[in-house]
Length: 78
Image 1 (tube, one colour):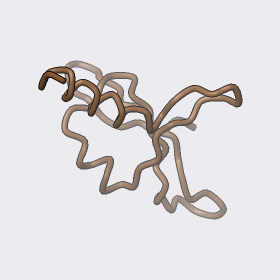
Image 2: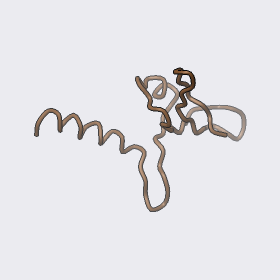
Image 3: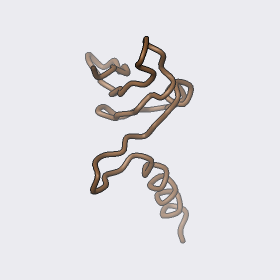
């Protein structure tokens, strides 16, 4: 297998952490450290942050990468 296809397959397999199933959508689950290590999130990318402590009983949150005026930020979906 060529290097290009090998790289593509590797990247594709890593993205399968979030996928569709007959039971719904599975969003990638990350810790805050893993989220902060993302080098170039894509606008609209969603993650389920698992180690947030924002008061009882909530300990996790859904976040989306939004870009406004060429500045991107993770925004919590309420």
